[in-house]
Image (cartoon, rainbow, N blue to C red; front, side, top):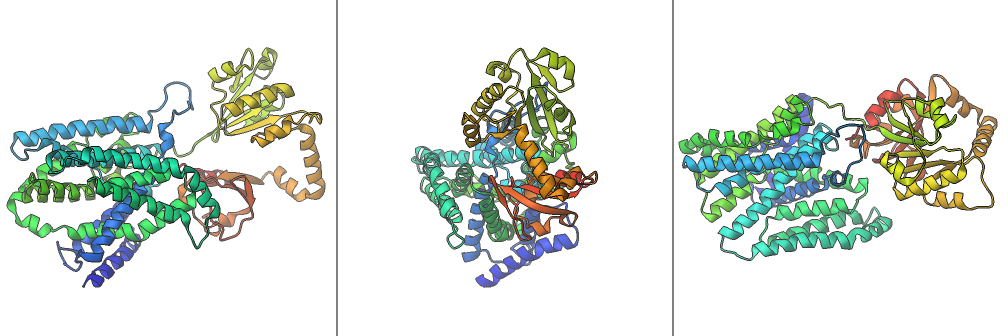
Length: 609
């Protein structure tokens, strides 16, 4: 019977997305559909799936991997100070929005919980607050993934709110259980869990690079390390009395901080969402006994009140999200945050063990959570409208205003680049004055920093004086500008400073070398040079930023029939492309094609997701 139940669950996991694709069901996230399928197959209706033994073990492993992957989705760069990208007021940071938003959830949950105590529905307001603040991070991630929002500002804001709605209730539940239960050692032992995460991060930061260097297809050391982290921290969490999924979430954050390769995250995602996680969602639905809940009139009468509570306690998110996002998306994010099921069931189990939750109350909370989990993502999908913030402009700084730099600064596409140009020569500023030119008294580091010259992705040092460009290059290196291009009129054979700059990552060029290369190309490969001059075709370069293309084989690109890929530039090396070459985030795709197609290709490939 156990093996038949597992077979039915795996069949449902395979058929559900196929069924949704065939009938074009896009309003319901796959995770929610799997919960509904589980309700049909389990105790509530057909009774085909029995959730004991191996089926339950695989489900528990599924939620562990789901929470682990959730931890890996946190973008820690959001916690760093963000450079100014535009003049005037800056858009609210996702971290700040998430912190303020979740604070409103806590306050509203606390108020609603005391209201329940006032009407004698539930006499433990702190425990009720923990229940109302929970958010199903796994369901939220699944919905954001399907909308390609995980790495956009709206997606990261909702993700951080959901992460807080998973971690804070987990820690609170552990503390509440320790204070009100029989054990009094869990409070200080919980610190051991956090300390273990920090120690593992410090110890394995360098080891991970060694793993990547010696990894082979037969060892898959990166995956072994990931599962080692998961089970180590899950074991520690269990030993100190915390919820095991808290350990899994911390393991995911530790793994993220180690800086895994894109292939590693792709493989872990494939393992999780391809096998274990669908089992968890289906078994979660199968475990619910809606027949028993509906048969009890008292439980049935309590459900509307609890359901209203799940929505009211999240309504404070709307004005917070509205500070940065349009009305429809602020509403969509608010409704998505009402999805809660993952933590409700284990929290209610703790409550029953402590003797503070009755069966009727537990049933009301459970069914209300199921309804919220189904309706929240559906409302999100219906209300969400794409934001314009899908394409990140490259910030370019030119230092030195002259016949070389000004025409380039003026002709860079405003759709792709934010350009600023600095000159310390008043006569040049008057001659070449344009909307991008900024006059400075000198090129001292403090003056350039104050003007925001180093807050860019690319800095072009185009002054005609070689010593000035050398000094500016050293400043840019100290300020950690990602790309530095330095011009030198002619190479001085008596110094090695050009080689030193190259060793530090500066891209050095001079007019003589450029002319030699151009003339040589004209002689040896005239057709290539003709492509560069052609008014219709051209050679272009795009950077893979959209995670939808990560792991995709080159032959499966939607526009591959319209272009010819000549090189892939990855980790400072050129790779010869083949049809089965997999693309990674950060790859530079160099190709030739019709210039009228390049805008559409860039919009797809360089969309931040």
